[in-house]
Image (tube, rainbow, N blue to C red; front, top):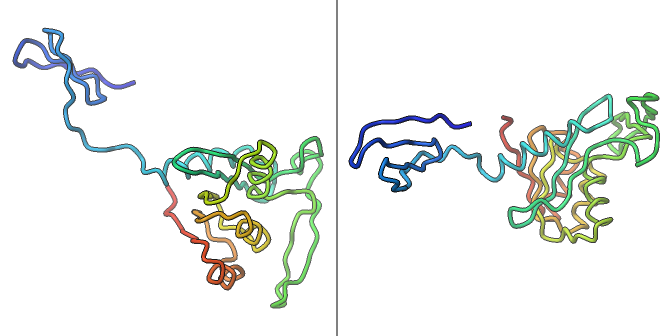
Length: 185
């Protein structure tokens, strides 16, 4: 709650309700200029993305995703098991290993759907087009999610934690999808 402050002014006592609105004792209201302390739209959506990640049921990483267009949220998603299926939190991870074309060994959970895929699935389930949308995700997408995001028509992907960026670099360049790292809060 905003602090209430009072001072003497023209027309009596002036009360400032903290939101830039000032009311005089005579009942007059006016707005005083204040520094813009609100978060930017990118900060706002990324804060929500990190809150969405708290719903994650993955024991290895909490990842959240938010799809937006025209400053409105279209869908959200977090990593975890499909609806109605056992979660890693309850029964443990089902990890498998694979080798990338470059020879690197990767470990992935067979049980988990990535946050990006869950957000896309939520949009599809609700009949929401995400063509031309912006995508906010706590971690940069893996190669599989990035390929799907390219095909959905997403214009830009914002993230705070880099994850295997080298694996998506060629696809990022060729696709034209903007990949934008934001400073963590």
